[in-house]
Image (cartoon, rainbow, N blue to C red; front, side):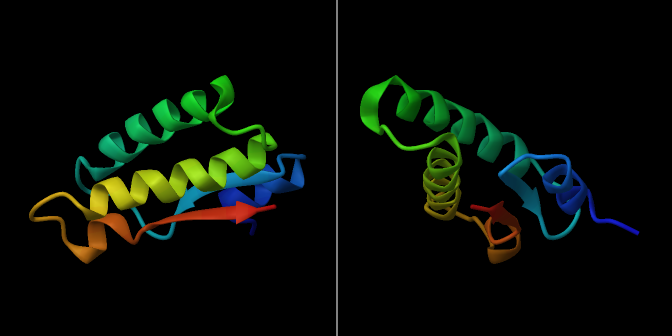
Amino acid sequence: MLHLVAAIQYYGFRSVVGTMWVLVDMGGVELSTFFYWRMFLLAEGEGDGLLCERSVRALQDAVLELWEKEGMTLERWVNFVHYGV
């Protein structure tokens, strides 16, 4: 059996953002909104790195954004991981 992230990498994607367990709250919506906003911001000239490098930075920034919210528990922001280059 192949994990979904491993399957996506097997088919050629260099980097994949995933979770370590199932999300049960709105943290995923908040994180993905900020993640994609950050990816497009980095693509517009703030960073000239490869897409996989931008995704690592965007995920880090998005997780930090969640972490800084008042009342955010560890289980809600530590779940997100980046696999790949």
